[in-house]
Image (cartoon, rainbow, N blue to C red; front, side, top):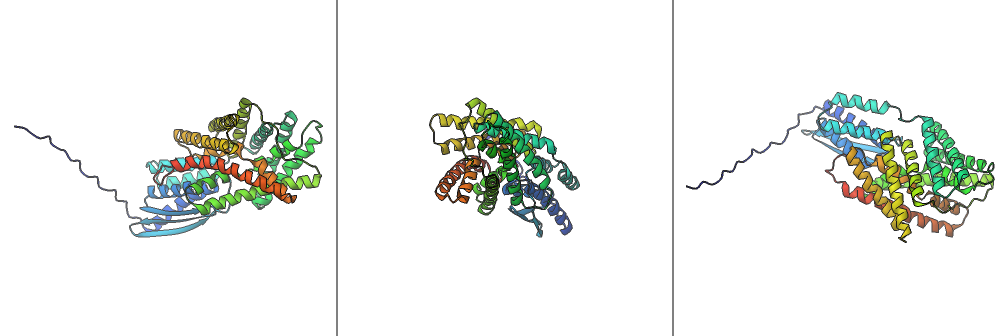
Length: 425
């Protein structure tokens, strides 16, 4: 007598029913979630990461759902529980770059989703994160910025004098910026003042060294102001279809670059020094890779990346530089070569972010800086100011193509690895 095998059916899992939250409890959940989003946006996170952080934190704390809309200047969020809902708008007026704070909030959110933190613990932890000082002090940050800009001067083909002058000028300018950021001065005016100071110090020191070339330290000393985080966040927002946020950040980045150019132009106008904004031949591939890594590490310190991750930021920049220069050696067009560099930054940043369970921006933003064509951007502004519109349009188009190629490389990886159901990584 044959017997057919029995089929054991597993009981269907019933969906988890979330507890009912009163209006006051919904308000508390929304307050905590918005606090996390505020700190993220203030620290330089792109809008998608802010939205995910608020949504995952709010649902982990008991809300059935959160609808979140984020712009660079405001957050609108609604949390829902069994038909009850609360809505709040949170303005974000101040912006800075603090990748360590961003990573801390991502880690806290992950622990909350895993059930390791309760509501009161999350609120207390957020206030600890908000009040914690930067990992690096003012003088150490200035030293790191000096190292980064000195590395740029060497990448531009400068000698020992140019490298030293660029480092001194950038370090002193960073000290000035660290004081001005605590005043009520606007960001664009602050950028003009710091750029004027950096380029002015560089030209003053050049006069003391007869062998120094004025153009290289002048250009390298102002690169501490390049809005790398804004450019990366703008690309991330545009590639996910958030045109308004992407354009807003992109315009902000262009305005900052314009302010840097105006600062350099004012210095040249006052000093009456004719400085051609060009660079010399780059160093050998190996030396250039080390210098690119050094520049990325310097800016990683500026962006408050923990010391354990500094070497990885430098490693990504060094590898990406090797990829770009290697492509140029085999006569690949410049735009395609820098696209490959951006692709390399995107892939390596994504891999390391998943290994270490950290935000991708912690690696991609510092590594992005050595490849921003800041010299061409400054040249464009100065050419327009000097009424040389033909040359200005030429450098503008070239700058746009290079930035677009670099951004496309990074943005493509970001778009391929980000879906609405992706994790916080």
